[in-house]
Picture 1: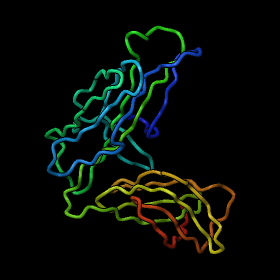
Picture 2: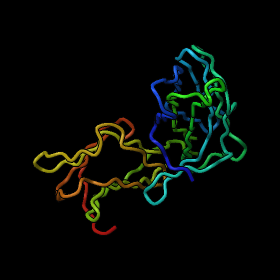
Picture 3: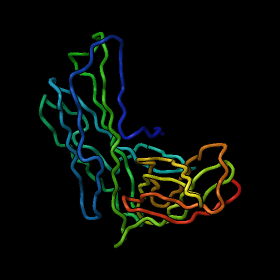
Length: 238
């Protein structure tokens, strides 16, 4: 199992003042594959002054015990998995469904791990190379005419946490999440993206310690970009 990284990670290798001039850019930042589609397209662009090499891997993304999991899969493959992008150019990568990637009652989730690799002419040299990693979400649509998340929310008293359970057939993207008491005091969990709750999964996010949970709390958030304002109950136990 791989541990899920942030959407974009920058890795610094080596020592010294020099830095790689190549700049890897990836679009789009999310891919959706319809039930009847066999593939999707990812573009890798090089905004730097030197050619760059990149690797594209596909891993299955699930959520178990309130944690993200990334596991190897052959249900989606990247073609080509290894490529060279000339300076100022861009290259197409197809993300192809294999025969095992059949539609499910719920949306299936994957991640594309796009890594910049050290070029042959730079290996073994001194200095610092900044190598980019992108983690791009990919979703295969559910076998459902109207896929949508269906969320249940709880505040856990011990340990203090916000919990979301998604019994729907599609993922929920959570952003701008805050707990608000009757006096309007906000406990902000995230000003931007907090994370996802995948279809059929549940996730939990810790609340700041030392702050009592209000009995009359409301949850303010954006779910897949749509505003949410609703009361939220406190439950005991783990």
